[in-house]
Length: 348
Ligand SMILES: NC(=O)c1ccc[n+]([C@@H]2O[C@H](COP(=O)([O-])OP(=O)(O)OC[C@H]3O[C@@H](n4cnc5c(N)ncnc54)[C@H](OP(=O)(O)O)[C@@H]3O)[C@@H](O)[C@H]2O)c1
Image (tube, rainbow, N blue to C red; front, side):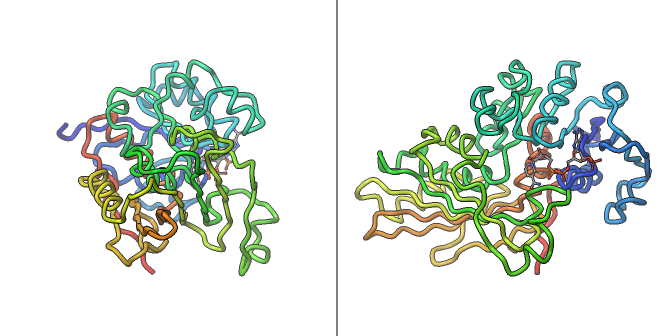
């Protein structure tokens, strides 16, 4: 594709997902960032308001205006809260732009969305047209996609951990899959809330939205199991900023060994630039992926119990949001999949 640059916009640029999009896109060799918008009236130079984004010099953060967005962009990332994001994404898509939406608004059928999000669903035509962008499992559909529903952060970690085993038929029928997941606090976005005050969060740890987390139907749908009865999902808030640790349990069909499981995962992820399988006896850690688009996966089979444990780590804002959105953009435009995403994890 040579030096071709796509005129790209970010809507929701003053949120955590939007900021990470700017961080990645301002260094992307095939992107010209032409529009970044939030929800505030004032207009300001990006490095002035966000000194941690020096590569975005010359870009101004402005209040979202659909007409200006359409004039300046051919492709847009929309990272607004659920309930607002899908409408903006659908409007831009209907105006002829290619769109990746980071919210949950386009990921579920309207009736399922309304039940789990307790909000009116977005444009049903847009929901129908949107490709679910778990990149490693959706490349063929992403190549021609004009509208992409970027997966949720918990679903990304859980599905990358579980899909090889489930799609290969290793799971025993009649047993629910168990996902015990912990997220850093940036998963909740950049707005004030008492339960996210330092004094509440530090040295604390607890599950939330038990039995009613909106990511349950998204994960269940992709695993092709019922949201009720097919899946036990627990979301927990970690006193950390970035990262999701998912420990998943799969009851295995009789006779399936750890060697069988490792063979399935090695084949599924053989050529994946962002996925690493830990060797036997090792498990991944949050800090192995922080700041990067990587997902690290560890495997252990308790042969006596007949249960597979899968451990996965992602950075919720990168592989769980902005990074995967850029990866999807790369596939949509035929660029190398790692373009703009070669940043190494940040350790310690
Ligand atoms: N955080 C994560 O780890 C993560 C991971 C995957 C997916 N997501 C999804 O990505 C989306 C963005 O998440 P985030 O964490 O970046 O959220 P956030 O930090 O709360 O940012 C939300 C952005 O939307 C703007 N906004 C808020 N209300 C709006 C409205 N009614 N109309 C128009 N714009 C509005 C905000 O602008 P102002 O700042 O100007 O108010 C801000 O730019 C959400 O749908 C979230 O579910 C988040």
